[in-house]
Image (tube, rainbow, N blue to C red; front, top):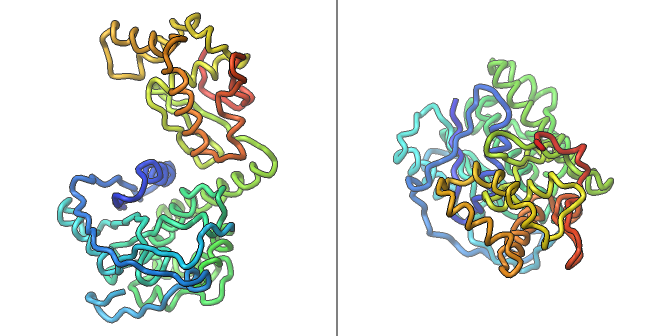
Length: 381
């Protein structure tokens, strides 16, 4: 079964790709597919809403479905808070627009990821036909604090809503099956939105909800993939939280001929660098003793060997010129590239673990990556 994951334009592509990559690493009959955005007919009509206070902002609104036409921590937000919102009907219409443009099978699921709020103030929702879903991707820092890796709650919401498709026959069964009082189960209603912290940290399924898988005769391969993803998200969230406290960095793995760099213990998060950035970062990883920037010309041949397979340029002269500019002490290119690398690292792992992975050193002194090379796999000398 295919799950088409759509990105609305206001959601950062980096966040979208990271969520998709997290879901795709767990093998099974569900295939999480990226959308073709040129076919995504985006509806720009939004309503402006004012949240007068924190209590109102953190409250889910009630919904009752009647038919297909029905509408359905570390606090960093200051109130009153202005937010753009859409109706559930608008959000599901965008899913249907994609279905028509892409000729998506009626047996497939479509999930829209969007930073735009919704009129009922839910984290996510399902259409009456149980085939279209939306997940709100914003405000997770408000509930979990600024160190949260938002891939985890977004991916969690995606897989939990897909699980409900298999657990329940229709919308009415979903709404009657929720737990009004939170017990740390995926079916907790979380009317008080801050209760989602408990639900995600346990990432568990209670016995009565477990029975629904058996009652609905959900195939074992689907069930196994569901729980693999839930367990993977919980493990990664736990490691990430403890690593901040214990100052414990994740392992790095370098894969394939394109030398993709992954933080293994952070749910396989990829550090996305362009060819020049990646070449320079790999050079510093290989030299644990560090390199003085003024000595980079001594490493030109090594940089060329790293850079050439990663870029699409086959002209030796252009390759040579790109590296010459990078290592020229009279050019500013090296400082620009180092700054971009370190900014991407900070975005990926956060402030608390940044020092382990960044390329750092006093001005005029050796710069190096602090990370213990025992934690690096796939780095070939």
